[in-house]
Length: 314
Image (cartoon, rainbow, N blue to C red; front, side):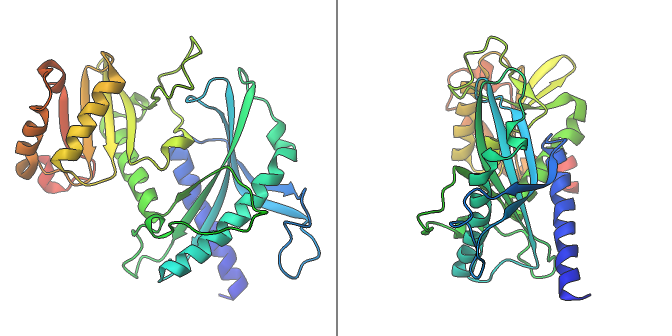
């Protein structure tokens, strides 16, 4: 396959991967292949070009934010599918800066395009955010599930590059979201699973505030704890899907979080780790629960794994 054809094929493959993830997030009916006319043609031009004519955005998702009152949230999505991540931290930073500048320039010009002017009912405010999917398609180098996010750290961008919020999903983050959400929908039934919307202080003015829904909020994408609301047999269950591995101290903090956000809403609380092992870890669970005085609350809590193997089915 020629170089240009291979790059095109890789881009299409990456977009298919991301489309499946977006549907898992409840981000349906995204606009794809959006072209944004460039407003800042001089400052946005690439080296060797006279000016910048336009910006391409792979997907745009627009929704009414459940975490902010009366707010329309537009998310600009860039898909980067590559054969492996750079082997050094400097290489990772350099490539990410390239991706970031690309989406930052597009986001600067986006408010002037027609799609951004679309209205959503019951909103009178709007915010824009960007999301980069950096996917390693190589399954053979042993690095396909590593995190590049922790290796980026701080860096300098040229002063004329302005952007608001940018989230990054690499293979590691994508795998957490994919595995945990798939587990919840498989175990409890897709129709019974929704994302739980916490009180942010920005979403409490509306008497019609939603406490759960099918859309994963943008703000949850880089959270290491994903809250879900399960309704099963007419009972409400709070499910906390946790990215990091099990430890007693972390479980203690998560119990405190569950106590804070549920009040009397949940009949049961499930805290799911990627690696919890009942045989090895059950005593640590008992110890963590004993730190709380309200045993009627801790009795509601079950700990399990969302990535089980045959040994976890006993």
